[in-house]
Image: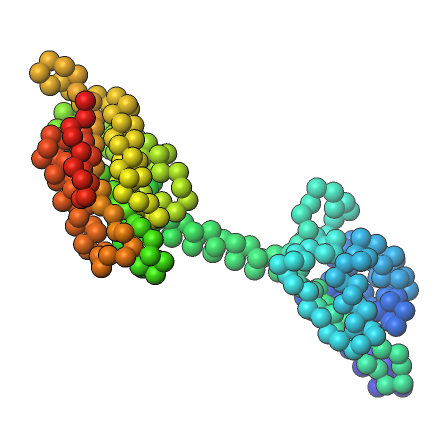
Length: 327
């Protein structure tokens, strides 16, 4: 008898010392054990809950996942682990004990329900509750940091649009998809006209502001989710347009040319008349069936861009058709 009492005292001490919540229910779902961890984080002393039906103490948990887990443990001898992502804070438990829990945020919890088989006694079940608030917070911080790093890796630091690395990944992916599906893929190479003159006249700080303003206007005009706008280098941008035939690519390029001109960004005077920032655009399209690779598509758009620049700037040229100078 003395040995039994000693073992029970030792077990009680262990359950009181462990850094997790422990609730034991009998076959009638009455609470027969409530450890000190639960007293600290629920604000309820063991004497106030022992002998009570579990769902009398936690009525909000009825018809929830915990009820079926308890039933499976007591009836079927089946262990359950509640999904932490679906059941973040099922119990009204708080990081620090307090008289009132009003306005406080519950701790994040991991919950396991385990059947307990006793010799010559009905089955019981153990509910273990672990505080995972710190771990969840750490995972959230890591996810946020990963998103920031990903954004920094694939975004241009000045304009906020995709950078050259992002462009290289996206054009490769879209080219392979176009070949696989036999769909058209268009590419616009967009260059700000006379940008060196603008920088020389207004300085690099104003030049950066000009780049950001033009990039914002371009991003606004590329409104399909699959389109990718990237800063290709310096004052040059590239727009990847999946599932876009030449006519639509030309129409969008012309709309972009007019939209940038309409920004009316002052770029000094020419022959006594005000001059505003404009863009020249080269357009190339992969039909989806022609044996055109990525370097050829980029090269075709580049050649069209240089033709637009050589033709007097502020115009759109396609690798398939030449546009007349704008009126």
